[in-house]
Length: 355
Image (cartoon, rainbow, N blue to C red; front, side):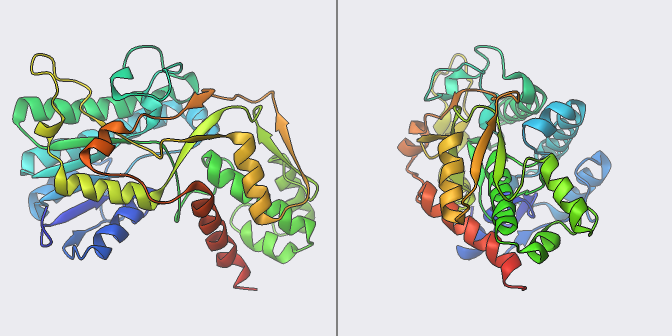
């Protein structure tokens, strides 16, 4: 990948894609190609094929995906499986047809079995059943990495799959019904803090696109999500442990791999080539209860955190072995508390600066 390479970032507005776009810009890659959904629907096979035929990108970062938390994954199982399979198939196949030199496919740590030994190594893939609530999304991502691997083996492409851990950072999804655990906890605790301080105008502004403007209705709406001035309800026991990586670190890892790593570097066994994907993580985990407590302290909320044990915990521990990526020469830089503090400060500033 060179400074003048034509680089297509699929999903450039999302948490990961926007960070990749920023990292490439910061490194003076100027020939960046982006399209929003109205310009290019990645679910449209014909449109994607035509786009690649006309634009002929040299490098592709495939960060586009339908994503969500436990509730969304478990509720919209067919949508998560179909849409992610379709996006991946369209982009990866069109990249092959148009002669893309390097493609970076972004997956997820949920590809691994529910009870995989921690830290989870790449060769744990397909060794046992997946966690039920996000099984469709995981199956789609497994299909994506296997598609990349298979195109490499059959057609001599250079498509590399990265499997990041739980992400957080700018441009995250903070929707109370569909967000992942980190943005969900941040928004819930921030809203509770504003209620605690009587800053109802901030609460109204934050929720203006989600519920009626009458403050009684807003309070009722928030209570449905376990948010009051006195407490925040958190799904599950709080005991599950999760690993979190700042999106800027993932972006740096993506660009590092695109510049320095080729598929041939990932082949260990000439007889049966598999598990050539690369884990990307921080290498350390934290319990959900500890994370919630950290966010509460940073925000300054004085109320209580209540765990709803009737809700699912998901996998009890998930931290990845990142030794493969470290051996290739990359380590993350942003510590968890530092990164969470930055994200919260940015989230607060986006609303409080307007008051």
